[in-house]
Each structure stands twice: as structure tokens, then as C-alpha cells.
Image (cartoon, rainbow, N blue to C red; front, side):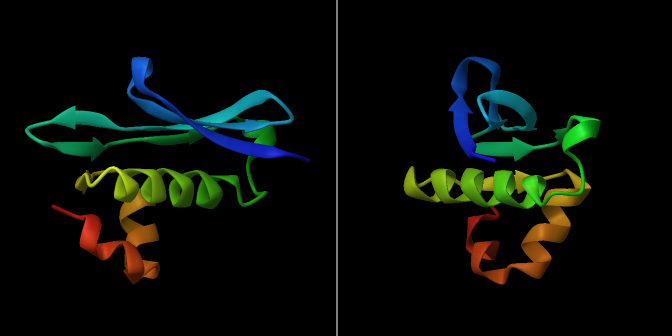
Length: 92
């Protein structure tokens, strides 16, 4: 299984692809100088494979590389940042 996360700027989201197929996404809406992260979703057949964690990690790394800050409102992303304190500095 090959996975890739891409920034889909036109849709204000990050997509995770599994073998070339979109398996899920993380919404990242620019608002008041920060990226609001309100929702993470995986297609049902891709759940339970660690893909949400891969998606959020790749998105946060990309956001960091662009020098942006986030406002996580998605419960999954909030919990992820609590468990991975190395990303706490990204929170506005």
C-alpha cells in the first residue's frame, strides 16, 4: 500500500491518497491569519489503518514549513496535538 498526502489548496484541505485513490482529507481553512482545522475524515474502508495520523502529521509538517499557525477545532486534531507535543508550537 502506497500513501501520499497532498495540499489541495483549491479545496482548502489536505488529501491522503492510498494507491492513487483519495482515502480521506483534513480541512484547512485560512481565517484571520491562521489555518482553522475543523474536520478530518477518512472513507470507511480506509479506517483503522493509521491513515488519519499520517494525514495529520504530513499536514502539520507542511504547515510548519510554510511558517503558518493553526487553530485546531477538529477533536481528532486537538487530541493528536495533545499526544504529540512537538506540534504544540503551531497552535495560534
